[in-house]
Length: 379
Image (cartoon, rainbow, N blue to C red; front, side, top):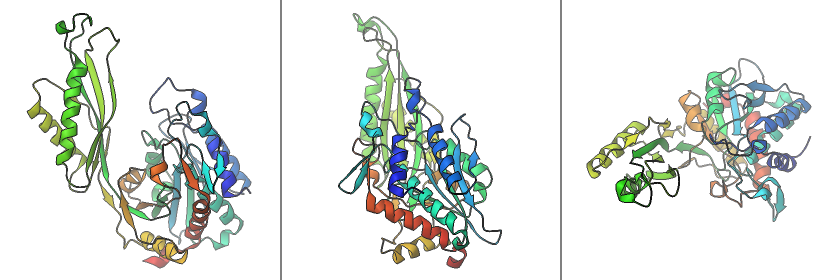
């Protein structure tokens, strides 16, 4: 079987961009189907049977495999998403490059590095299944970067929905992450009145109105609780440069501590803006709403990971992070789930995305140790 570095380079070279609802992107780069074909072939060569889960999006399945030891064993799911963000005009991001002990390319750390390490560990475990001390599922999961349909399928379908513990290989620099900020996302829209731009005073400029709202949101963030944030990530408005725009929409991303629920955050901003503005605006329904989560450090799975980290001379102290992941959906489905993976979130989504080769190799060994370490012994 290929080693973990070769697997990662293969995965980077297979484009799997999440279109995120955009039709204008090159379809030859979009979707997870090509990655899924690679993973299915890899699984079969390892002597295992591919496990395929249909999602709500056609041709964007979850693909993985399971080593089943029996009913008396606990079930652990190790998963990484197979989609990536786009590459823009930088074609080099699809050409994996090894330099100074690092592998560069789109998805190197988010999340194909963790994916490569998990499947390399699975292939090695399959050669000595008697050493595996849990029922182990390793899954490549679709659509994490946008509408998380893959992780929703994990929580709804057999055999993944019955897992006792989950580990997601997001880039955490090989540290345990057991706490996640909540998230709330929604659209905010305003309307105006279209008119020819030669006489703009006869129209009502929706983009000007939205500019006032964006300035207010920037001011609003200064009063948020410590650790909480708000961001405007996208803006869309206008039909042509010579027409006063009659509509404008922004997308809001709000990150939350346990002090506020997604609905609380939604209601609070609506109240604030209503008190500041003399024109109407509208909110969409919440498009994503996840409460902040903390998996107790005393939970057997977290204790097991801490013990493995200590044995491998890695940081064994669980911590919390601000970025989102499929851990929200996994925990909401009743599967206690944490993050642990190679690479740094600081490099994710950038044109210089990379993962250190030594972290990649440590990750393969770490995931293999999870498979061999009986979860029942950590109660």
